Amino acid sequence: MPPKLPGLYYDKEKKRYFKIEKRGTAPSNAAWSSDNVKKRKLEDAEAAEALRQMSLNKNRITQSRAVTEPLMGGLFARECGNARPDLAAACFAQGLLEKGKLPLADARWASDTNIKHMYVAGKDYKTGICTAYATLDELTLLSTYIPRDPKTARVHRRLISNYVRHSSNVAPYRELAVPQIADIKYHEGSNRILVASRAPSSEVSMWAFAPKTTGPDDPRPFWLIGPAASSAQIPDGTTIYLNVKASGDASYSDYAANTVCPAPAGSPYICMVGTSRGLAHWDSAGDMRWTSPWGPGQYVCHPEAFRDVFAVDFQRGHRDVVFFGGRPGRLFVADLRVRADQWDYLGLPAPITHARSIAEHQVLVSGLKNTLRVLDLRFAAAGNGMGTDRDTPPVLRVNAYRNAAQLNVGLDYDADSGIAAAAHDDGTVALYAVRGDSGSGRRLRSRAVDAIRSRHGAVHCVQFQTFPGDATPSLFVGEHSNVNVYSLGVEDPEDEA
Image (cartoon, rainbow, N blue to C red):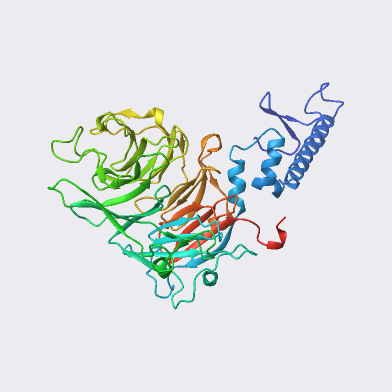
C-alpha cells in the first residue's frame, strides 16, 4: 500500500496522489476534499474498532468441556442430529479405571521384561473370581486366581487367601514346564488349557490339560489350581498333562508351534495350530494332523506358500472357515471343506502378528511396519499369492498404530463394544474403534489405559475378559510381572448408583 503523505490523498482507482482541498475549491463529491477525507477516516476507524470487538467476543466464547466428553458431548451431538458412530465405544473407553494388579513374581527378582504370554478365564460363577495362566520366562506355566474386593471391586493378592487353604505358597503356582512357550488359550468344549511350544523339533508339539473342577456345594473355586488340583479329596485328583504332536517332513527339523486357536462350538476340531511350516489341527479324536500340505509330493501348491504362521482365527459364525497368516504378509482364507489350492488370500505389506474376525465379512489384522487394518473378505484373491506383491485395499486403516518390527506384541478385540486393545512397541497400550458402522479407526481416549507406560518394552499380553457376574468386560494387561486390571466403574465406590 502506498505511504500516507501529509496533505495528500491517494486515489486507488487513478493510482495517484491529490492535494487535499477545501470544499469550496474542490469539485463536488471529490474524494480528496477535506470533508470527505475526514469522513473516510472516521468510517475506517469505526470499522477497525468493530472488527477488534468481534475478535474479542469470539475469543470470549469457548466450547464447553462437557461437549468434548464422550458421554455427555456424544449424547448432545446425537440430539442435534450429528451422532458419532463410535459413541458407545468412546463411552466404554472413557469409563475404564485402573482396578489394581496381581503380581506373578516379586518385582525385585522378576526378569526385566513383561509377561510373555497369558490367558485369563472367567468361568467361576460360584466365587466371581478369574483364573490366569501365564509365563514370565517362556519355560514355566504359572497359575493364579484374580480375586476382587466386593466393596471396591479392586484386585489384590492378599484376597487369594480367601479361596485357598492354608499353604506356605499361596500363588502363583507352577503348573507345567514347557520349553519355549509360544501361546496359551482355552477350549471350552473340552475344558482344556492349550499351551503351544515353539521349541524346534522334527515334530510340532503342544500341551493340553483340563483344570480340575469342584461341585456346586464345594466352597472352593470352580477351577482348582496348584496343590489343590492334586488333592485326594476330589475324584481323579491328579491333573493329566497331555503332550500332542504332529510329525512333519523328515527332511526338516525346525517345526515349531507359534500360536493356537480354540475351535468354536460344533467344530470337529479342538484347535488350530499355527506352526513354522503351515497350519495344523487337533481333532476331537485326539489326533494332530496337518491342515496345509507339508511333504514332498503332497504339496498341491507352492511349497513355500505356507510358512511361519503367527495368527489364526475362525471366521465369526463359520466353523469351517479359518484365517491364518504370518510371514510373508499374506492372510489365507482357508475353507476346510476344500483343497488348499482352492483357498483365497488377502495381501498385506508386512508380516502378520494377529488376526481377529470382527464380522461375517471383516477381519482385523495387525502386523509389522505399523500395520493395523480391517480387511473385507470379498476383496480376497484366488490362489496363494506366490510371486506377487498384492496389497489388498483395507476398508479401515488405523494410522495411529505403532509397531515397527516386533512379533510378540499384544492385541485383543471385544465384540460387544467394537474396541481393539493394541499394544505399541514403545510400551504403551491404545484403544481403537474398529467395528462396522462404529469403526472410525481413531484412538479412543481412556485416562487409565493411556497412562500405561511399560519400562520393559512392548506389552506382550492384553486380553478382554468378563468377571463372572459383570455386564461388561475388563481389560487385563501383563505389565512387567503383574497382571493389571482395568474395569468399567467409578473412582469413589460411594458414587455407585
